Image (cartoon, rainbow, N blue to C red):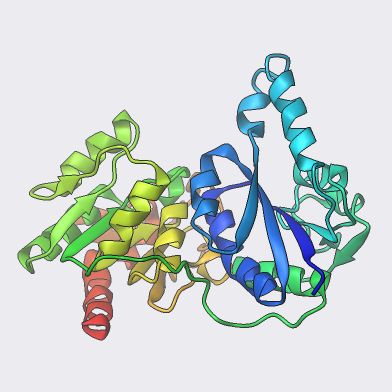
Amino acid sequence: MTTRRLLLVKTSSMGDVVHAFGAVSEAAAQGWTVDWVVEEAFVPLVAMHPHVDKIITIAWRRWRKRPLRARQEMAAFFANLRERAYDCVVDSQGLLKSAIVAVLARGPACGFDVESVREKPAALLYASRFSVGRQHAVLRQRLLLGAALNYTPGTAHPRLDRTRADRTRDVLLLHGTTWVSKHWPEAMWLALANMFSRAGYNVLVTGGDDRERARAERIAVDGSVLPIMDLGELAAVISRCALVVGVDSGLTHLSAALDVPTIGLYGPTDASLTGPVGAHAVSLSSGLACAPCLRKLCAYRGAPQVWGEREVEPACFAELSPERVWSQAQQLLAVRG
């Protein structure tokens, strides 16, 4: 059978990359050999996928800061991009910069239509455009690749098949995120950590930069703050956990894809569009009238929202109390045994 080659352009971010995993698995099942253009920070993540043949590394986030110094690297990237001819090139990022990459590759460029794409000018560059509407990000990826490659997408959860050790009694708390408004209050993290600790679980907390690590140390109490790890090492830790609780972040999506029981906490963002997807993943969402607002900074000006005797900020998280999260955690842990 003649090899059919697909180049997927999905450069970032971590959550967006994970959202494409199921679509890539389906394309491979249809007989397509898949190459992937991705930002250098997420190469270890894409390398976990068993059906990716070649990874083409782009470093646009770094290059744009000093484009003149990056000329040689950029030239090498474009040479690598054009090394192979492709039967189809799909830009599933939907940005102008990713569309340009798709067009410069050797193959017909496809992508979202003008009503579905994230940046409308990007749609003008594709040879073929497809409508996917307002859907969950995982489904958008599946619908796009299915339309571009002419097959009907499936519905199975995206999953990374990884050899893992027996699950431990570790519970991982993913408190770090880029938006201020997506931070679940520290006092709630501490209360939840204590609930798990009293139930005999070992609480692990991620730590990144100095500010995040300081918060992690306050949350962890008798638990452990993880050292800085690359994505492969962190994925190994996640895959052994009994449960992961996280805000809307790439690592929460990765946990769900690794088939670990996962709870996503959604206040300002919309779980129906970007909630973690997995066989054992659950999203808890705020019912506050202004949620999801999709704002990076909370603009709530209503009556104070309270948990216990504390005013909660961002206000939408008042409905996502530690008690509610703990109750959901017990259900997931009971199912997995």
